[in-house]
Image (tube, rainbow, N blue to C red; front, side):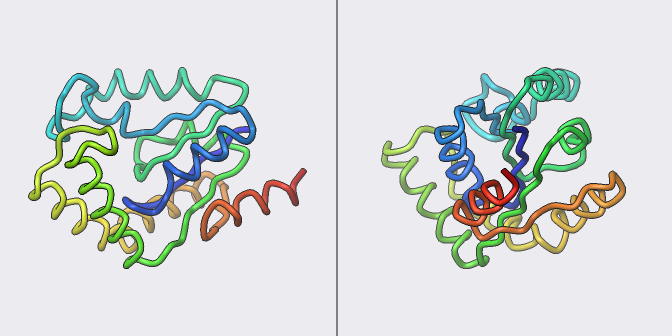
Length: 167
């Protein structure tokens, strides 16, 4: 099974991917891990695009996988080979609350992650507000050009329900 999970920050992509990975025994790739420079302590340095693209191609060459992230421009290999492409649809207020909660949890050491500043939090929240009308719109246009139709789901229950219906 090859699954791609798409949506903006705070939508629950990582949580859903982790739960699906545990349930089905499938490896997971968080696209942030290859988009950002792996050795950087914060989110200021992007990874080399050639290295990033090579890592993606190597990962999706596996027999089964889950890829999750908010990106789209460089994901054609993933979109073309995915059995299922899911777009999560939680409301903006919930996504924003999750971004703030994650920021606080990282600041007090309850959750691992790169060093974030208040400024980076504000930038992430601003991007999250425009994501659906910009990035997601462009991603769904690309998917349409590739002949792919994503499934829109509220969260884990919607995805597992869809997967069980397809089995």
